[in-house]
Structure formats: structure tokens, C-alpha cells
Length: 80
Image 1 (cartoon, helix red, strand yellow):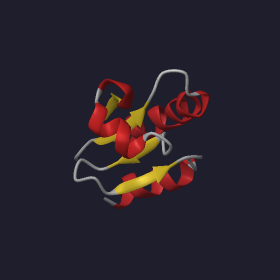
Image 2 (tube, one colour):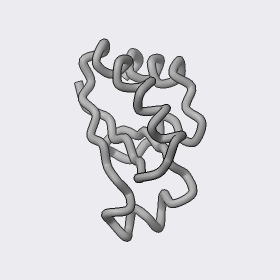
Image 3 (tube, one colour):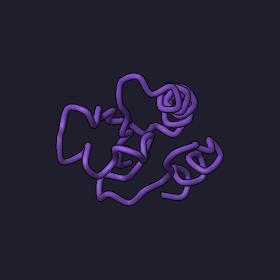
């Protein structure tokens, strides 16, 4: 199964909370998570600055962003 990208940044409590919720869901589904700090890439910072956390497929299709609903992520991982 394809992994997911988790776009985050330092000092983002919403990101930390979402990652803590998503990690066990992804692990149970056997889906690897690529954690990406947008502050380390100016192009990503420009796109995602006000949107993090963002969870997406490698093709850029967004699974969830902002306030992450764990059920939505679980459903997306099961249906992919």
C-alpha cells in the first residue's frame, strides 16, 4: 500500500495532536507516514503555510487538513 504524507511545522500544537491521532491509525492499516516539515522547504511553506496539518497521498490528493477527524483518515486508508 502507498504511504501518506503528513505536512507539519515546528510549534504547531494542532499538528502534534493530529500526528498523535494518525500514527496508530496508519500503523494499524500498515501505511507508512512520511512526515514533512514545511518550514524546511520554501515552496511547501508557500503552499501549506496556513493549512497545516495536511495529510495527503503522494500524488497530492488531500485526505484531510486543519482539524483532522481521525475517522476520515481511517476511512481514507481503508478505501484506498
